[in-house]
Image (cartoon, rainbow, N blue to C red):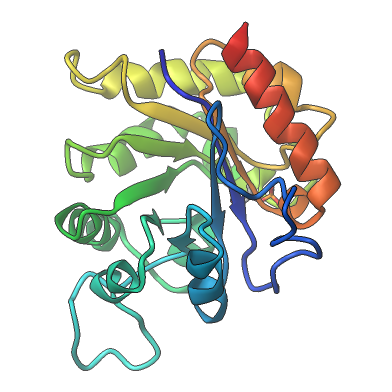
Length: 237
Ligand code: PEP
C-alpha cells in the first residue's frame, strides 16, 4: 500500500494565506504525506512550523563557485526533507539536463533527503508520438533508488489543461513498468499538471497515480485542502 502524497509547489510565490494556521491543510497528517515546496526564502519558516518541507531545486555540489545557487546539502542542513528535481521550469528555463537532474537527485539521496523527480514530455513531443521515448530517456538517467517520481506533462503545467485520467494512467503504468521489479510496487508516482479540486478525484482514483504535485491550486488553501481530502478518501478506499 502506497501512502498518498500531495505536494504544494508554490513556485516563486509567497506562502498562501493561512499556511501556518493550526488547521492549515499544508500541515503533516497521518493518512496523506503533505509536502510544501516554498521559495528558498521561505524554507526556514516552513521548517520551523514543522511542515514537511522541500526545496524547489538544489545544486548537487555541496558548496563552491555557483553564483545564485543553493546546494542540496545546504537545504538538508536547514532541516528540509525533500528536494524537487528536474521540474520542467528548471529544465527549460535554467538549462537543467538529464545528467544534471540525475546528479541533483543523487546529491539529495546522499544527503538523506527524498528527491521528488519530475519527468514529462512537451506538447511537440506528444504530437510527434514521442512521449514514451522522452519519459523513458529522462527516467533512465536517474539513480535507481529514487522513490518518488512526478509525471508532469509539460503541456499540462499551468495551462488549465490537465491530462485525462486515461492519458495519465497510461503513462503512469508505463513509468511503473520501467522501475526494477523489486521496487515497482513501492515507488510513488505523482501526477502534476493543472490538478485541481474538480479533477483530483478522477486522477487520484487511477491505480498507478499515487498523489499529485500541485502548482496553481496549491496557492489557494481551500482548493488544496479539497485535493488532500480526496487523496485521503482514495487512500482509504
Ligand atoms: C507544477 O508546477 O508542478 C504544476 C503541476 O503546476 P500546475 O498545477 O499549476 O499545473
